[in-house]
Amino acid sequence: MVKTIPQGGVPDPVDTEEAFSEMISALEADPGPVAVDAERSSGFRYGQPTVLVQFKTASGRIFLVDTLAISDLSPAQAALSNRIWILHDADQDLRGIAELGLQADLLFDTEVAARLCGMRRFGLAAVCEQLLGVTLEKEHQAADWSVRPIPRDWLRYAALDVDLLHPLYEILSSKLKELGRLEWAEQNFAAIMELAPRQKKPDQWRKGAAGKLTTPRQFATLRELWLTREEIAEEIDMSPSRLLNTSAMISVAAHPPRTRRELNKNSAFRSPRARQFEDEWMDALDRAKWMDEDDLPPVRRSTDPSYFPCYATSSYLRHRSSSISEVLKERVHKLAKKLDLEPMLIAPTAITKHLGWLLADFECADDDVANVEAELEELGCRQWQIDLIEPLTHNIPRR
Image: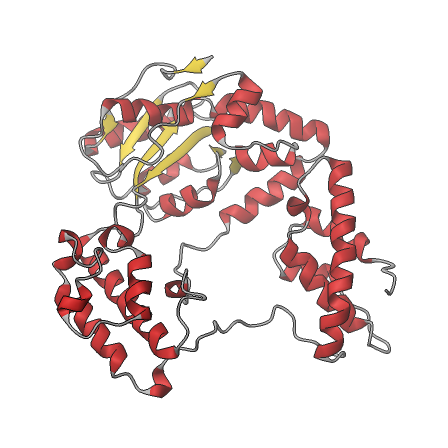
């Protein structure tokens, strides 16, 4: 069955202080779990801001909050506290909603729950289809949600995203209890709520350049162009990739132009949008051209190892750790098959690799034993993962 209209119809956006106050009063009068979703202006606005937040109460009322009109949602915090927020793939949505002034204190993530129940297709549409026999439309996922007024059909789509979360919550929470995994899920939910605000990676400007740029000066050119693009994009509130695509910057960095005419041979730089900032691009090229050698970035990304050895030599660890990691990986896959879970839910590759180094190192210790549980906790594993992984590290044969 294709679901085209949400229960109760499509409401008008909450885009005035009066409507927002009415929504808060309605939330206060309607206790119980609340379904929550958010739409971001991904690929259109700078920083991919959350521009619409959807709520559905336990009794079925849907509210679509236009956060371009109501940018501070904190007055609704009290009405939304001490109740479960039901979201699907809550990570990014919670971060964006937090930037608007709202924090969840209880969470149920239907994607996490679906995966812990053994489901291999866990997008919202797939979960609804498998558990409810309902098909959701997906045609507006990539829309520019900052468009105002929001088209009526988009509002319908947004309302449908929260319309079925309550029945999914009921089914999945019941399944988790049957499997004895509700506590696992709760540990994951707690970790999601503790995630730090979104931050840019310090070397994000290097993305896509490996193998295409070969000298520090070329990488400096890319960095200066990337930083300039960020400054301009933030100023004009536009997604950086819409202003100028990254592949064009890498191409120019590989063969830096000496004149404006040479720069404009690249079609992306002579587009009407990018050409407005020709002076800024040329300034970036000049900064890289005349940058002191000591200030040039390295060709290879500097990364810290995940494990610093205490007892073994690096050459021994490189040889031995890989064989231990392979044993752990095999054991994780075997356990995952038994539990009908994806192996990465138990132990991602980064975890088995790290444990390989740890265990190989402590094989060289005379009277010391690796504290695997403490190490896994330090790596961010949940207690249920630690309980499953730690026994797998026992009695690993030498090869």
